[in-house]
Amino acid sequence: MAVFVMGKNQQPLMPCSEKRARLLLQRGRAVAHKRYPFTIRLKDRVGGNTQPLRLGIDPGSRITGLALIRESVGEQRHVLRLFELAHRGFQIKKALEQRAAFRRRRRSKNLRYRAPRFNNRTKPKGWLAPSLQHRVDTVMAWVNRLSRLAPITAISQELVRFDTQKLENPEISGIEYQQGTLLGYEVREYLLEKWGRECAYCGDTDTPLEIEHVVPRSRGGTNRVSNLALSCHPCNQAKDNGTLDDFFATDKGLKKRLKTNGHTADARLERVQRQLKQPLRDASAVNATRWALFNALKATGLPVAVSSGGRTKYNRQRLGIPKTHALDAACVGAFDMLHDWAVPTLTIKAMGRGSYQRTRLTQYGFPRGYLMRQKQVHGFQTGDMVKAVVPTGKKAGTHMGRVAVRKTGSFNIQTEQGTVQGISHKHCTVIQRGDGYGYHLHPSPT
Image (cartoon, rainbow, N blue to C red):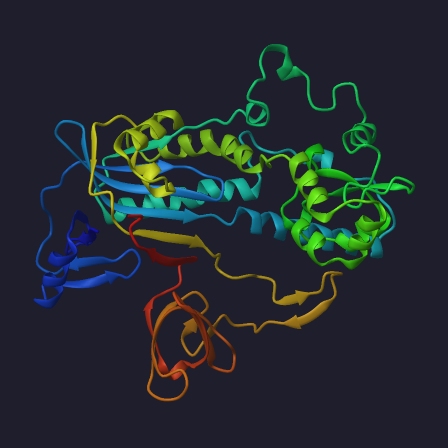
């Protein structure tokens, strides 16, 4: 795995091997500049010769793969670093929905009814929802950061487009693209025929049926017809926002109703799962952001080459490379051979920089607790990477990871082995200030 190198004037130089970086640090010719990704800064060198470096990008809805590659003669590529960037689009969407619900409750409680005003708010051309814009902004933030750490000369992007209808029905063609699932049906009538006019869970027929979400909205479910089912009132209330497996495994009332109707739990569960379809929100997110990301990459001034997902898969299978997001990024574009790809992957998780909201609320919007007004405690802030050396006690030893501060001065540290609670600030030393991301180094896929 290569180590980033910066000159005396903080200009990016060619990355070096771990052994060479260790020798430079031991001999006092370099100092550690950054912990994640690990970067050294030379004391006695200003410039130097560089080689062509390419940054491969495999955009994804949840995780985006990044690969720093050195290009040599004859379409040969050498992998220097691998990254996987985990987005937090779902958390942003959930927070915005909660904020909107709280605002709606306040207005409906304290004001008389007024006409909605959403129609008079225009959006600029190319507007994306905050959860989607976050994906573009996060990728661009790391493209700019890596450009400051290494002399990147080109960028390769997988400009993939998902055919969402073909994902559902591989045989679709022609006019069938214009004929949706509800062709000739209303939603409730469609569900009645789909589920045989009986409860999807217990099979009861002599009862009023209600429309319910198989995968609850609170767990990422959507309003797509494929995620809707018909259930009796007892099943709908008992399932609540739980999962199918837990509902069929633990609910005693369901088991009693199944026995009464002559059904088995395994058969009914298999039937419901067979009727479900794979959600398409991830494919839709990639489709919506692909051109915005491409235009943002072009604005960097670096040459941007685009490639299809089919070529990436062909390259990976041709060379016998395992499938990961980071290695997919290394396989983007046209080349002959890929060398040194079995290197560890640095997982970068977007954590945010805290919350402006200092009051914690219940699910009904009432205060349940208050956070401290200042973000720093004894010089530490939540998100900082720290090293804690505890001399005695149950937690004696060295702990390194992301810290969560407390007003009492007793901190929690998120390490690779788990969370260590109750570490005094007196034992902690900052090794890197919080930048809104959490880091974890995964070993090579081989």
